[in-house]
Amino acid sequence: MDLNRTLGWIAFALFLACIPLANWMIGHVGTVCVPAGPCLVPVAPGLMAPSGVLTVGLALVLRDVVQRCLGLRAGLAAIALGTAASALVAPGALVVASGVAFALSELADCAVYTPLQRRRLLLAVVASALVGLVVDSVVFLTLAFGSLDFLAGQIVGKLWAVTIAVPLVRLMRRVAPTPA
Image 1 (tube, rainbow, N blue to C red):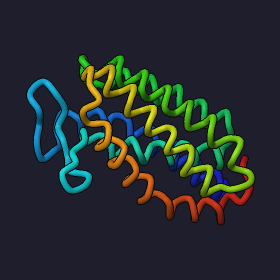
Image 2 (image 1 turned 30 degrees about the vertical axis):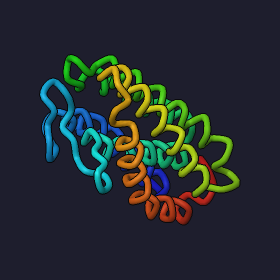
Image 3 (image 1 turned 45 degrees about the horizontal axis):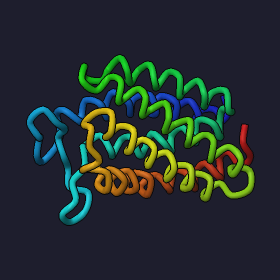
Image 4 (image 1 turned 180 degrees about the horizontal axis):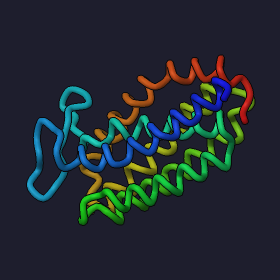
């Protein structure tokens, strides 16, 4: 197996691992846990977000890696499996919010990433992640908590994860110079 496909399958596995981790973190990891609400982490001075934001931001980039290395079908398969995993592992009260937000955000990410990836890979990853993280944040917070109180924190937290993943994009350009 070539390095490109190996990287793609590693990204696929990590992408799927992000989903249960994000759902688990929301109820168990944070500096503050809101009664009948999420556990929160600081993402900037004075700004808190549900703790799952960190892995969701990474998932948006990993899906792009899957598509770049394994092709659009593998990217769409990852979205379908990820949506099912999200619905299966989310706490009862968050099943619909988690599944719907995941599916819509990843499809939005894919819709932006796909046409841009051939010309400007870094722009494709960043732009698609921005669209995906906003969609995920708005849909998840609205469905899960009926409030957008943590929207700014959600967006900033996911941006941190995307920023941290940028070196992966640089590696991907070397390993997979053209899309699969």
